[in-house]
Length: 193
Image (cartoon, rainbow, N blue to C red; front, side):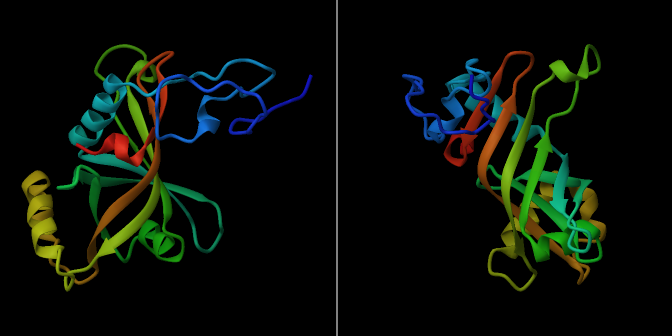
């Protein structure tokens, strides 16, 4: 029996009958002929993913460290931007910002466990894409900074410092774990309001 890895494209694998902009590889066989645990994208999955982004005021950011080429994870403050995608305020002095300037590819994890129950049964969303910096001289900055401050008012203390910039996450794909047995792969368009 052949051994398959997650994401392998397998000749003759059956696609879900549900239309989805997510590449076909997410609906394929993933290991030893077992069906993938990824469910077809549904309106409920899209709604939950958008809600997780909307509710997030901080998130775990994963980048590749420029010096060591190793993964680096940190916590950052976030808000949903006017376009519904994550928006953050970052300092040039931080390791993660320096890493993103070298390699803008990153991942952001949103969704926090509730006060009760197993933390792994609570929904969470991993967003993969790349960072785009919006500096103070950028034409969009004033509007985005005002929006950011409405949801993160304490940032008023340092948003004007010269080493700070807004960072927008340009999402390519997302993975939603809505709880046990509720895994979905989402395209960027699935996340837009």
